[in-house]
Amino acid sequence: MRKFITFIAVTALAGSVFAANIDQDTKEIGIVGGVDFDTAFGTEVDLALKGGYFWIDYLEFGGLIGISDNDVVSTYELGAFAEYNFVLEAPVIPYIGVALSYGSTEMQLKNTPKKDASAAIGSFNIGIKYFITEDVALDSDIIFRIASSEVFPEDNTSSDIDVQWRIGLRFFWD
Image (cartoon, rainbow, N blue to C red; front, side):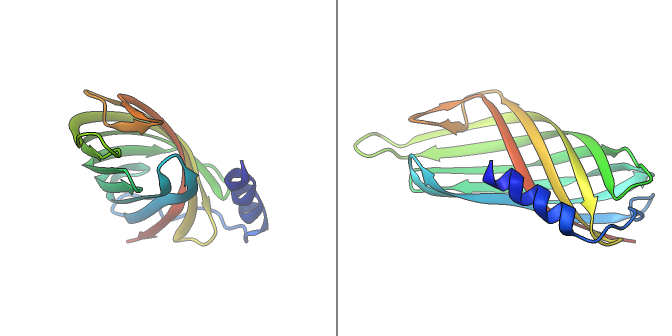
């Protein structure tokens, strides 16, 4: 909840600019993630990078790579995504996206054998971009993921379904 309140405060105080740079032939790099200092398995660091190209106005295709790590669980992901942006005459742009990726998880609990799993992962996300300049946007989304096997860490086990709230930055150029 603190992350959400911080995100709202930052966006409310940031300078307001109308979104402009997501037309055809625009390129984008994005970084999303977070740090959780109090998990069951120690400090967890999540980081995802994505890069894309707008083939037509408001429709982007690209690639993604992600990593999540704590003292017990390491998760890696590599895939492709598509995203459609609903352009408004405002600094906020809502969007929806889909992705298909390959994920791998390594889990090593104390006094138990190491558990490795990998899977195909399909995901759907919905979010907003808040443009603080013409070429830089704060990003927040909720991502729903389903995998072909249990690769998402959950308490003392793993699951094939995952829901996350993410925040990040997006950079655009022609």
